[in-house]
Image (cartoon, rainbow, N blue to C red; front, side, top):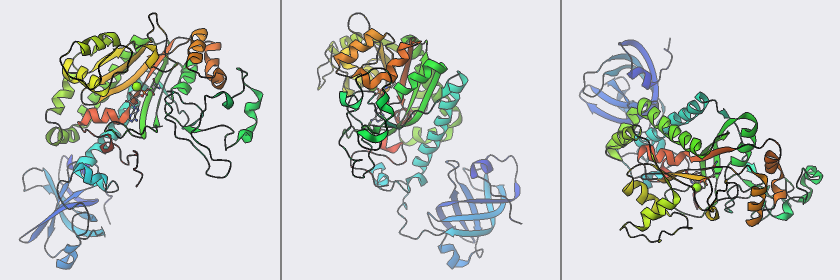
Length: 479
Ligand code: 4AD
Ligand code: MG
């Protein structure tokens, strides 16, 4: 009888030899010696592979040919103490069965390939050590996100992917259409007067189906943020968070922007801006410490091959409180520095990537929260303060720049309405959002963290395309 298959990660942790085990995976390498072949088998469950000893004659010379790099196979035999260095256990094969051969044209023959080459092979790159490690860490961190919020009483909520609003107001919505006549349309302008009735409370004609054209009866797009919907839920459930795909039609081909990325957005009733920064700091520290604890083997690969010193950089992060400065102080630090910038730092303009990098990489040499930006460079929903600033905060981290953007939200109806008018937003299109302030509105805050940027920060990987399995960037939709 065949033994039940077992994952290599568990086998390698075995306390004792096992007389009969069955493993399945893909061949990393095969080396032939006198009387034996050594096969490195990896099944994705860990960075480490299992060495399989294949006695000459088990398959014959013809059969052995199919046991080549990339082939899928199953092997049965005894788990025994390894004779070789570098591993505790090896498998002495009694039976070996090739499930899917991979001939000499298998594209990943070499030990190391460039990231650029592997981007062209995104359908296969998870089989390399580096990308296997990235995607295992991605999974581990997803679990750490849920654990963190669950432990603090935050409810996981699902906000829509198809939306009628452009939360950030930056015009980066992808439009959603059926592709059928009548379903087509240009870029949606959901906030325009034509998109909603002039009546600011629930208009009757809203229930009228698709009469206004297109599937939804109004322009639809892919969400740029679940925040506005999360706010509504926070004002009922108290503490909530989203963790889902987010889309931005930014035509910026940078190493930090993707058209499709995953964002984590907590939103908490009764939190002010300081609570919000405390939450963001605790959150990032908690995910980093889970990765250090449970992803040590994979992190060590990045420490060796991607960013020497990575693990100690991450460990140091956990020991101290992170710097917190106001935007005005950030501008002062930048203007009085001797660094030469392409964009002159000036009060009232947004911080550029070069400014963010200077603040965290050079000046603070660590993460820094920058808060209280001028209202003029921030979206409509942020809480207004005296002196023309808003209760906003960004968390900037070395290597990546902006990791988190958040704010306390404007809960005061007259101020919110005034700001929307200033920005040319039609309050009628936001009647559902404004209702949350109309009845039982309360102070509340939240933030958004780009999951891929967190993974870049954690692994030292410098291009966002290399921390997501199938990157979506301008001109890139192959896989
Ligand atoms: O700063 P952003 O635009 O903030 C919001 O969307 C708020 N509504 C969030 C909130 O308060 N709930 O985006 C938040 C974070 C950024 O700091 C960045 O980490 C990430 O999302 N992000 C991107 N990541 C990858 N590719 C892109 N194109 C990104 N745009 C934003
Ligand atoms: Mg931002």
